[in-house]
Amino acid sequence: MFRIDFNKLRFLVCDDNPHMRRILRTLLHSFGAREVYEAEDGATALEMYSHYVPDIVIADWAMPIFDGLELAQMIRQPDSKGNPYAPIIMLTGHSEKRRITMARDAGVTEFLAKPISAKGLYLRIMSVVAHPRPFIKTKNYFGPDRRRNTTVAYIGPERRNGGEAEVLQQPSLLDKARVTG
Amino acid sequence: MAKNKAPAPPKVQAFADHQVITPPNTLKHAIRRVIDRELDDPVARAEQALANLSGEFKTWMRSECDRLAAAHAAILKKGFNPQTRGELFRAAHDIKGDASTFGFPAAGVAAESLCRILEHAPDLAVVPPDLIQHHIDAIQAIVREHNTIEKAGVANELSARLRTVADDYLTVVNRDRPDHLEMISAPSIVPKE
Image (cartoon, rainbow over all chains, first blue to last red; front, side, top):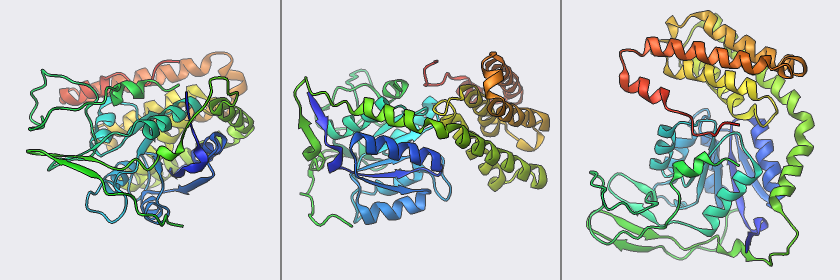
């Protein structure tokens, strides 16, 4: 059985709503985290990301200046001087399938639909810490491997060429998002 | 307070049209094996901390309602523009996401219905003002009269009725956009309570 030592992890929480930031801070401190930095918009979050070098980013989608999706895209710049690989957990009130696809394609690592629960947040953090996925770089994508299962029948235009598919068997991001508790 | 120690370079495998990059796992130092009998339960601890915070939820919900009302007042005064629409959407969207956590699930349903109108109506300028006004009034009433109407089941009925009316409206105004209509008719990924 494994546990996470939260006191060894540094978090950046990005949410424009002060009440949700308070809830996230309370949950993370209760898990044992000591270093929790907070930003109320995407621009501040990006600045704090460079300055504090967090281990894990938890971001809302809807924020002023630029939103959580744009924040993920800015972090996932393969040639940036900062760390483009930090896990990003998107915590959002958006709950439509197309939103999950958009988040996945922006390089988001995990998706957690509100209402938030302690268990849901803990499981997402456990997932990114204990089961990190390799990154894929193509001409139009850079981010965590989006393959979660092997489908030999897939013949879509974005199928990768060359090399055997090495797939971490995990539930799809959509299936995981459906489990909130 | 940036970290000083530079991580090892990632391992890169190049293929015909993509690279597979395996960054060093800089978080593995935080994983610890524990015996099954360990009593500490971080999730239970966090749930308790959230319960301790719950005394503030009603105040928070009221302030969310005030923000919603202010955003709506700005639209009544200035009309819809990207800024006023964005502020009303974010206020409603926050209530949609937070209301269940704060103990006002019916307000969350009404707020979601309002979000759908703001997101999927092709032209907000022609949305009947009463449709938006009724959503704002309902959310405020559900929060204000929480102890009476929530218990009586009126809050759930009110939210469900608003959602029906909003969906009927969206179906009509999107009738020429079948792809869009299919998208907005897709079920939510959030399981029912």
